[in-house]
Length: 421
Image 1: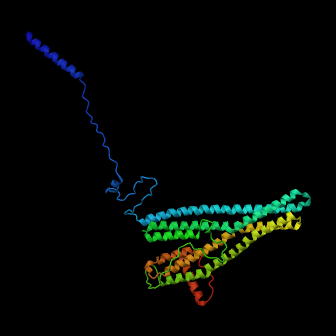
Image 2: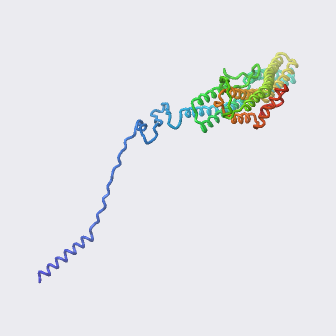
Image 3: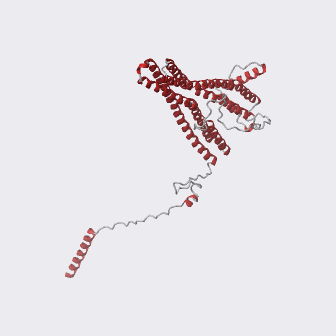
């Protein structure tokens, strides 16, 4: 019995000790595995080029900042497209250059005109004051006479230079160059947007850029256009091309018909007989007027300078009168020539004559193409001609009919081809 109680007591102690250990036992933390990231080896340039999942041809990374970037032809973009974009960048740069140069030369015209007029009028005033003061004033009158003579001489030299370069005409040249470069830029953008350019398009664009550079040069020394030619010559800003052989086998395709060809020929005749002839006549008048004014201005200031010199050596009132009157006339002539921008008017007529010459050559070269499939679409070409002349299609056809009728009857044509100018 005693042994039975001892066993129960031992069992109760062991169970209580197990409960206490279970109560204070610490739970096991979950094991977390840490994996270090694998370092990737840097890809070389050859690996990039050999990657079949990405682009096959890529622009290589430049290891040297002074090395020339290499552009390779891709499967979707042709090399001609790359070249046309390069030409577009050059054209954009030329547009900015001509614009800035035009603003600079416009400032030349304003500053030189105002400066020369102020010098001339001040010298004439000094000559008049010196003559009115008389002999008794002594040294002060002599100073006025000398200053007047020097200022007239300076005005003569500046006026000769200004008449030689004709700043107003230079400004008009830069305006036209800017407009024509923007026009060429728009044509190339249209070609890139709606067509698939080829190498012939690139060569044609290059020739047009170089022709514009030659027609409107930026420098003054050596390559400046002649401001006083013997007669007006139309401006040429397009590349000259040899006309193809005209062995015609006309078919009614590509928008061309015999009536449309006859219409274009009559339009060319009207442009030659009326528009081009009229603008050349007006341009020659502006040229002759500019020649007279460019000669008269320095001549009058030179006479005024001589009058002031005689006024210094002798106290003749006539010398002072000649100096004052010649100086005032020189200022008026200079204002009329450069303030009225007669040189700009001549340049405007020269460019308008060039525009009509371009239209003539464009129509004639198109009609001389024997294969009508190689021509521009006839209906589209007719619309372009009508828009350039400021007429509707019906008005353009009426002009062609009037020209044909007047040529047959031998009567003069009383209408111009263009309604814009």
